[in-house]
Length: 162
Image 1: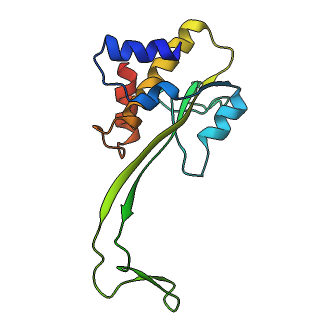
Image 2: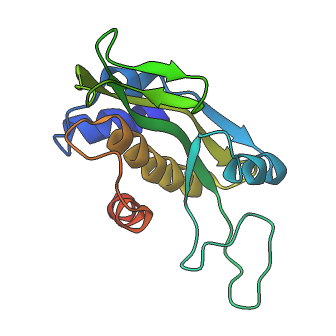
Image 3: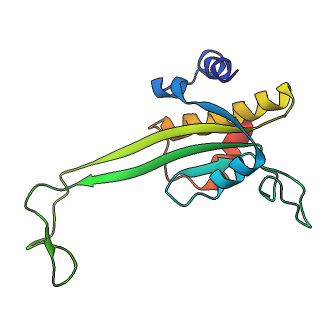
C-alpha cells in the first residue's frame, strides 16, 4: 500500500521521489510501541498523525480523545567539517580551541528516515490515509529542496494536505 502511495505522489502529484523513499520500512505496531517511539530521546524524530491537541495513543485527556495512529522516525542534521589542524582539544579548558577562528571546510546535511510506524488493527481505508500522511513526512525529510529545520506545525500542516 505504501509503495502505491509513493507511486501516486510521483505520477499524479508530479513530486520528485527520492530513491531512498521507496526503501523505508513500514511497520504495523501496537499502542505501546507507538508511544515508546513517540517519546524517544536518542535523536530520532517522530512526527505523528494526531488530533488538534496531539494526544498520544492510548491517553485520554479532558480536552481530547484523539490518538496517534502513525509515526515517521527520521534523523536530520547538519555536519560541519573543519580542515585538519584548525582545531585542537585543550585538556585544561576541556574544550576545542584554535589559534585563530576555525574555517569551515565543508558542511553537509544528513537526512534519513528509519521507519514509518502505523497502529495495528485499523480499517484499510484509515491505514491508507495514515500512510499517505506519513509518506509526505518521509518526502519532506528526504527532499533537499525543503529545510530539515521546519517547525512541527508547518510540517504537520503540509502533511495534512495529502
